Image (cartoon, rainbow, N blue to C red; front, side, top):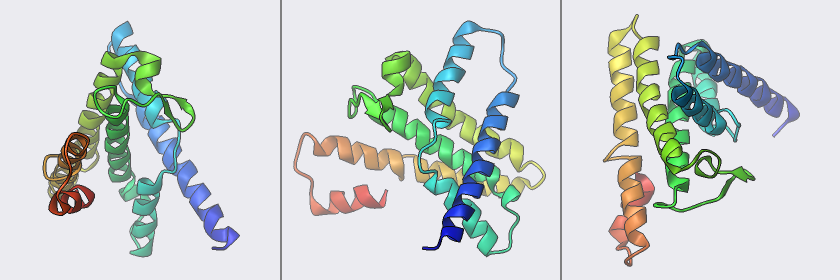
Length: 184
């Protein structure tokens, strides 16, 4: 890989991170300490960074097909919101009970279990809200994206895979279940 490739990734990541930060800065929230704290918990996990593999892949694929990356930024943001929600929930004591993520205290260690749970829930909901608002000029596209994200993140997707993963901690998995878990 050449340095140009890594420079390209860095630029795309900066654009994406700026997009996410701007989105959360623009949210109109009630002046409630609880809601403000919840937003901080959401941002704590979402805006801390990470590899940003999923949104970068969205942006690079759009460019490869000659699509303006600005058209896929809402979709990339929604995917990152869902990914972050899954990490927050995965770290909770009832799941993997992790204390650190990326070398920092996990969301529930910083904000408490209840707020972390709600932060994950809010990110999941916000992902779908963001898609519906961002693609309102093309409702068919918005509807297709909502369906795709719902399928990929729900019962027949990521959450179903997590259920299999949790069961594997109590019982030996069948090969078929292991294959389902990885595909989901």
